[in-house]
Amino acid sequence: MSLVNTLAYHCTSEAVVRDGISIAYEDLGRGEPLVLLHGVTENSESWHEAGYVDQLLRRGRRLILIDCRGHGRSGKPHNPIAYSGLRRAADVVAVLDRAGVEHAALMGHSMGGVVALAVALYHPDRVSALIVNGAHPYAEDLTSLRAALKNDFETWLAFLTQLAPDLSQAASRRIRANDLTAVQASLAKDRLDFSAAFAGLGIPVLAISGTLDPRCEPVRNFADLAGGEFLPLAGKNHVTAFLDVDTVAPAVDAFLGRVGAQNTRQGG
Image (cartoon, rainbow, N blue to C red; front, top):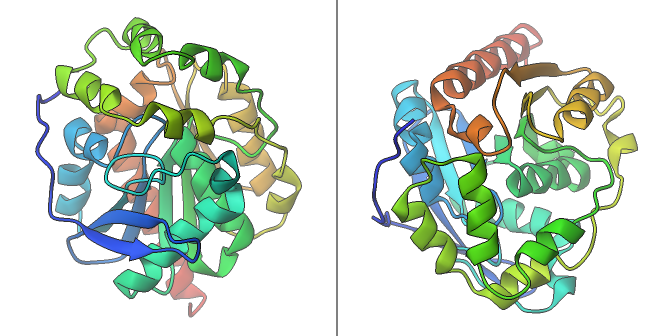
């Protein structure tokens, strides 16, 4: 797909977490809230550019777009300790508190999906549904990511361009505008396995993956473990699975509709 070339920033609010880090977010639309969490080296603008915001707002969703710590307009600590799952989960809860939202559906791509999983792990009472694209709760070695971001963002951009030749100039500029030390700190530690928590957790799950994404099998396994739904995107890789908004956005809306109908039947 051809991406819109835009760097326009939108009106943002701020929540401050207990460790003093400020988390920037947008709060758009009305309806049942859906939190959007972006991937590594991106920010909330990626959801606008790919078309998710327009499509989901038209479907009557309230969207809360968060710049994850270390990215965008949020605080950028340089200490790897600041990027634990517990702290990243607290960021989302702080935004929900600031926005006056008791519980919300969470949708994350890649790193954002791992953040969404962390919120479900540490604060399951705040999560009404969980949607992850290219993310899972199993152990993951991040050595290749650290190597691609060792000196600058150029090796990383070359890798992304191989996966998505139509990567926009705006996306490239957003990525180059990152604080490299903060991004490196966010990737300093490999991801640990916390999958056991999702067996019987009871949160509705939609797990999405491109069939060409090396993470496809663990994403599928996570859907099975959580008793959730799995959406394979044929011929898509880790990046193009995110860009396939015309498939993903309607599927997400339909999934959330089913979750809402089930909650209504159960009196929730």
